[in-house]
Image (cartoon, rainbow, N blue to C red; front, side, top):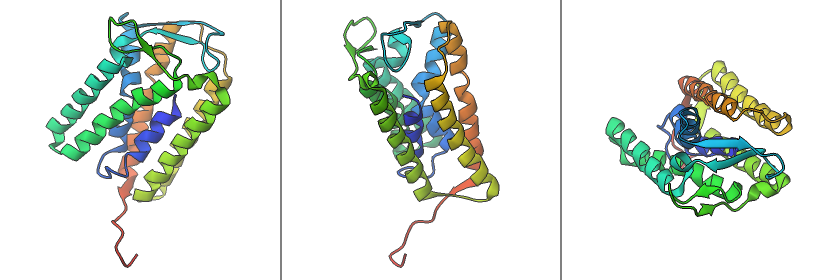
Length: 223
């Protein structure tokens, strides 16, 4: 899953309007931001295996630190706790922690059974939505556009720049998603890690949006 994770980050602005969208992007994508680092360090591994998965040619055969159930729960607590120690707000910290874990949860629905329960345990989870490319695209797109809807329900642009950078990001994510479905796979697994680092540009883009958006005032009975 790709744009679905960003959909969750966008939707999380509704229960947490004071949270930065950039921070929510980091939380919702934290496992995939960590994964390239671990690949480069040789602590986790992947390989190209065409034909084994209808949706991707990647074989995620070794990523227990970033994507196992137990460590994902752990990362959720760690990132939520770090946010609490910085901001001292329980509600926002809880939302951040949930956003981190939402990544594993969405992966659980989409991945073939390759998500380890815990490091060192050879039990793997995954409901296999990727087995159907059309169903994956429909469901992931639904999550993404639902996230946009919730975001715009509670946030508004302060100026024209905000509209341009927001819809520019949405368009960029859609184009990137379509391109990933149509482009030939990378031949070198390590190159995938370097591509993964490009996600930080999306985080920076989200913080740019934060500078030009503000929360809508709460609705009153008269509204």
